[in-house]
Length: 374
Image: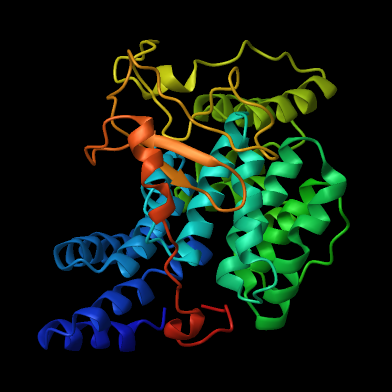
């Protein structure tokens, strides 16, 4: 994977107590993982890097690692854990733009996949931070999230535009994994695509129409959602039903609804919906109002449209600790999430909001090669 030199750099930094350089090396050893879904290999660096950065107060590098962990959990189907990681990034006023973009993309996409409200407020803020930068590591995660969210809402005519910026950058820089992802969303939306000959699996098989092989490859990469989407393109009822049931188990309501339409179109019978995501999250599979809280949950009965107004997130008083933190999400809305900082009420949290600021992040130069082909 071409990481030998970075591994050596990390060891030198650790041996000589060069803490900032060590934190940067941990990030360099993990930042490419989302591109290639190589999370098993990257996990050891994320875990060790998080411990190292926490112990030394290296907040910049720590937040990069948490953001990558959020994305890893998302793509492994662990959506609750992904949201928890994303929330910890969003409530930290020191978070720099790249981790914030990733966290907003993850949190918004989980909402979109679950059919929850206020996904676009998060996604729009991430896009505002990424657009015009010309940096693939900023544009790619939010472009993929926006393209998928459009597809989930049946807005197929917008998928091409949502994926255009990332696809252009990826083609210019030879980032084949990003090319494959953008083309896959375009194909699912019915957009005609020219398939390059050098795409990696599982994208190559899916774009060539080999759904079964693509699904197997996604399963090997521990990506159950993508595996289910690949199976949904098959032509037989049993395979499509397998896709539908897998999406139900994940709590992916909009995608399951899309697959249900396809299942009915070939004469298949759609079974009742699966259990709630809160029920699945409960170890005993019990449904309870005291379990499965979403750190980014919106009280839709209290606030207006989430994109055009400041929207608060209110935790029920009888359900969670009273300690909350109000975090300023710059371009879209305010999120109130559970925190253990000792803030006693929302008023106390709001009083300190003006002190929030966003640390400027060094651009991609610290990663070395900006081609995006890693």
